[in-house]
Image 1: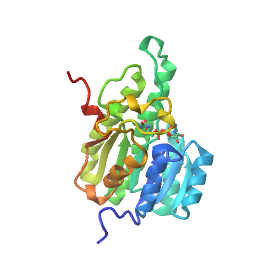
Image 2: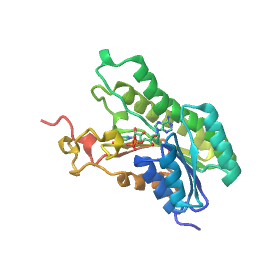
Image 3: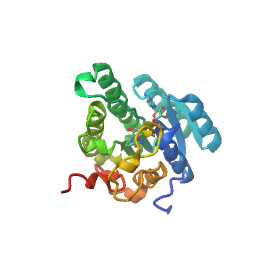
Image 4: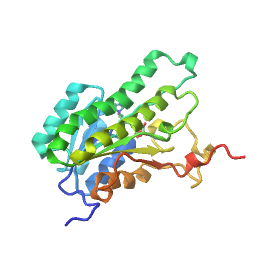
Length: 247
Ligand code: NAD
């Protein structure tokens, strides 16, 4: 029997896998033995990452808001590697503004990628996971899926939505052996957060996070170590969400 963190022979798809935290998930899943599809709109970075990893990695152009692209991605992956065992719905964007100056276009853009994209991804992989009688979907939410945050209206709404969708899917898909969980990062050092200085944040562990701080959680949820875990949420934020509002 293989170790619970051994993902050999598993097939994983990571959206937004070309850079940032997604690229760290790709490398970690690959290191654990999985075959990994790097799925992203960023072609050069994604193709370079897949080429660097070699035979057990493929790059696929995917805009997560595009239903037909999802169908093609799953069909191609099943044809090449036989199925999809793990889906990490990581692709995301952020925008902000006070509500009177937060136009419908910004709201629509962030909901489309961060929430509708997750829904489309789950819908696309579920048939092959059900057929296999197993699967793990890891939805990347945020600490902003657990609290309010000034100006981040669409982002917060999308990340709460991801948290809720995770739970309804977990209930529905559990009888089919498909687990669905959400991950809630705090401040992590990527292009998305480049304009935020983490030194002012109330992080009990005393530092901002790195993409590598997230990989253990995603590997755990992807593999058999979490075989009895579904519908849950794991916060990976250095303790920040606990450290607000004290006298
Ligand atoms: P990033 O901007 O570095 O990477 C995001 C990736 O998603 C990019 O590769 C981008 O090309 C891809 N992407 C964007 N729109 C896409 C689309 N329509 N289709 C396919 N791919 C698309 O950001 P990151 O910090 O690595 O964020 C990754 C995830 O983690 C996001 O969902 C983000 O909301 C979440 N998150 C990040 C932080 C943080 O502090 N960095 C905190 C909490 C949650």
